[in-house]
Image 1 (tube, rainbow, N blue to C red):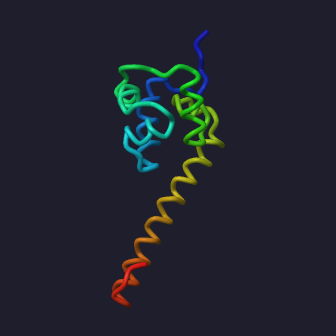
Image 2 (image 1 turned 90 degrees about the vertical axis):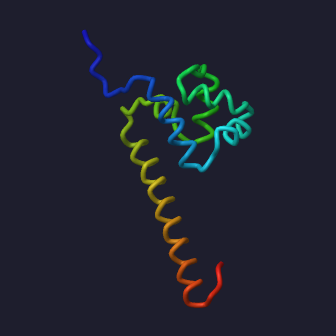
Image 3 (image 1 turned 90 degrees about the horizontal axis):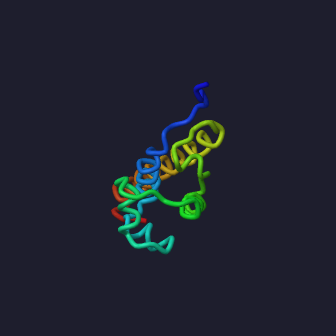
Length: 113
């Protein structure tokens, strides 16, 4: 019998890792340093040259505040995915608002925050 669960191939890990890293404004080197790895490990994960073991997946998931399932592209848990997506959207909106306020201050008062 074929598995009909709502899952994605774990090759989504590399794109999910890159997405999370970029959303958190981290370089490969910066992420590697933050979790105790060299940038080449992160580069190899994102290019698909190597895949992390379970301990590394847990370390990365904990660092980004997501589940291992989310990290490897398994999207059966819609509640978690939605929560994370909403947090990312809120972060982007806060950034846009901050930029607008800075621009307004500069225009009105000739200063920046």
